[in-house]
Image (cartoon, rainbow, N blue to C red; front, top):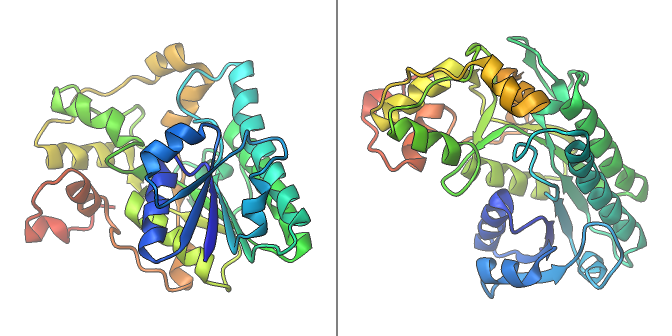
Length: 316
C-alpha cells in the first residue's frame, strides 16, 4: 500500500515507517523539516514538506494514499504546562488533524483508513479501576485534549473513511520515550518510583505499538478507539522495581510528588496519576503481543540476557 505518515520523523514515526517498509509498503512522511527528515529516514522513504496547518503540495501524497497515519503534535511532557504551552500542544494536534481530514475530503481517491493517534490520558485519573475502549472520557487537560483530537479525526468517517484511534500508553523504546530519561538515573544509583508509587502505568513496547498500528491499517474490521497498551499494566513502584532488577541497580530514591508539582506545575499530574487500561479491542481482534509483560520488554530493549524463570514471570 501507499501509506502517508504525518509526524513520521519522530520516535514512533521512524519505527513505524521502518516496520511498514519491511512489509513492502511505500511510505511518504509529512514533515515540517523535510531536509532533516530525509537525512534521518534514508532514501527509501519519501518526504513531503508540510506545516501541519495549511494546504500545499503535500496533499498530492494524500491523493495517492491507501492509508494515512497521523502522529503529528508537539511533545506533551517536554516543558511545564503554562497556558501558552497547553495551547501549542492542543493546536498542533487539532490543526494537523483538521488539515489531514480536509485533504482526505478533497482527494480524488480517498484513502481507505485514517489511523489517528490519541492517548490513554483520554480516561483521566482512574486509580486502580480498569478502563476499556468503552469507558467514558475523564477530566483534565489530557482528557479534554484527547476527546477533541479524536472528534476531529472522526470527521473523516462522513466521507466513508474507516477511522482508527489508537489510545497510546507509555511507549518503551531504545531511541526515545520514558526509558531514555529513566535509565541514566538508575545507572547512577539515583532511580526510584515517582510518588505516590501506586499509580498505574499502561505501557507498550515500541515493536508492539508499530505492529498494532500496522495490524489496524490492514484489518478492515477494526475501527474507532483501540487501547494501544500491553495486556499487563502495573503500578509505578512495580515498574521501577522491575527496571532496577534488569539494570542490576536499586530502586530506592522516590521522586516526591510535591517536588514534581513545584517544578512542573500541572504537568506533574501526568506523572503522579495513571490509568489501568486494557487492550480489549486488540485482544478480541486476535492481535498477539510479542512483549506482553514488562520484564520481557525491558530485557529486549536494554540488551540484558533473560533467564528462563524471569522471562516467564508475570510481573503485573
